[in-house]
Structures are given as C-alpha cells and as structure tokens.
Length: 315
Image (cartoon, rainbow, N blue to C red; front, side):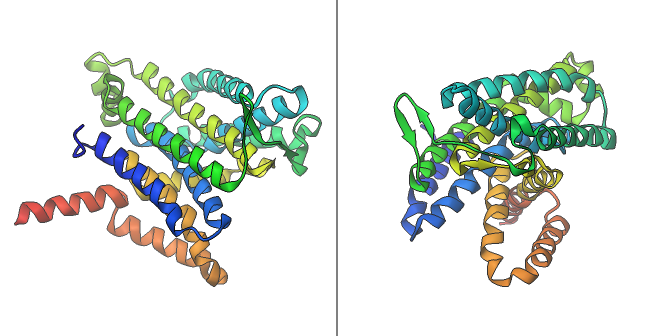
C-alpha cells in the first residue's frame, strides 16, 4: 500500500488522528465536541462533492440533514421502525426528493441556483415548524438510542468511535468517487459546462447524481445526529445552519476532500475555544474568515499545499 498517495496516506493519517485524539480527552465533553466535529466533517465532505467538484452552490443543505433527522425520529418513535431501517428509509426518501427537485433547479446558475436551494431549505424549515402533529412543531421531538441487531450505541465515547469509522468511510467513498470517471466528469462540469457537453459529458445527469449523493450524505448524518443527541428541533434546518456548512467547505478549501474536513473541524472547535471571550466570539470568527479569504482565497488546505510546492520549486 502506497502511503504517499492522497487516498491511502491521507486516510491512514486521518485514522491515526481519530485513534490518538482521545489520549488528550479528559472528560466526556471532549468526546461530545469530537463527535459533533466529525458529524460536520461528513456533512461537508458530501457537500464539497456538490460545491467544490461540480461547482453547484446549495444554501438549503441543512434541510436534507433535518429531513434525515426527523425521518428517523418519526419512524422510530411513532411507528416502531428499527433505527437502522429508519435511517435507510429516510435516506431513500431524501434521495428521491433530491432527484425530483434536482433536475429543474440545477438548470439554474449562479445567484438563481443559490436562491432556489435556499427556497428548498426554507420550505422544509416551515413544514417542520408548522406540522406540529407529526414533527412536534417548534418544541421538537425526542428520540431513543440507536439500536441495531441488539446492539445499542449510547454514550459519548461509543458515539466517538462509531462516528470516526463513518468519517473514514465517507472520505474513502468520496476519494474513490472523485478519482473515478464520474469525478472527472464533475470536474469538467465545474470547469465549463459547455466544454463538457461538447466532449460528450451528460452534464445534467452528473449534476443530478452528485446532488442526490450529497443529500443522502446529509440525511444519514441527520439520522445519526438525532439519535446521538436524543432531541431535535426545526432549528437544525435553518438557513444559518446551511450557511455554516457552506462556510466550512469554503474555509477548508473547495475541491479538496481533506480541506472540507479540516474546515468543518476548525469551525466546530473555534466556538469552544473562544467561549472564554464570548462577547468577542462573533467578531473574532468574522476576522478569521476575512483574513483567510483575503490571504488564502482557495481555502486553507489548497493554499498551504500550493505555498509548500512553491517553496520546494524555489530550492
């Protein structure tokens, strides 16, 4: 196995970091933060396939996350469906919904596409908030532990290891996807849709495919998030949550699987680090974002890698 490649070397480094990180955890709070960081990382790895590789903006991604969470909650708590079955059913429904809406909205470009995806997120948020008889309305709903084949996932430590394995799996799947003919077609679509069509790429089908894959990623994470937290409210589908996810992808670096992962981890951990200066937290976060975009417009990881290559070339 060649550890120098992005696929194997990066995955090995990620697995080592996840394995060794608990050595610095002194209590369950650190495990909880770690799990949330990895949930966001999986979400952003999926969203990066759409934004970074296919060049299609989405400002309603939190809506698919919330549909996965509420789908699992309703199926398990109201209809007694096993948690793993609820997760699969929710992801299937979200995938079908994403397929239905993708083809008409992905004909739009730029600001119009952003507005359309924003509209999807807002509609989902309103439905979750108003359909109190099904979703619990603004008060939200409670969920039990995630049970599968007689095995119950509970406690921050157990969730940490389960989420860690899922994160490695999500990165592995994404790396394989972008290194396949599908990934090359997505990059062609991002570069120039007209040029891609000229060489025979079915741009509409590939954009729909990556939109569905990205939505299913969000739904699966939403289902696990709901069972891990034990309680969900419509706020998880808010516009601000969608913007937060896009910000994580942009900060870490678009068209970079590990960049999106790093951006998600940084923006999940920063508020915890800045909690001691709560009154200045938003200002410091804004300054960090501005500084990063000014001095590293391609995102943290791609900019750092480009800088290292320039230094090596200058030797």
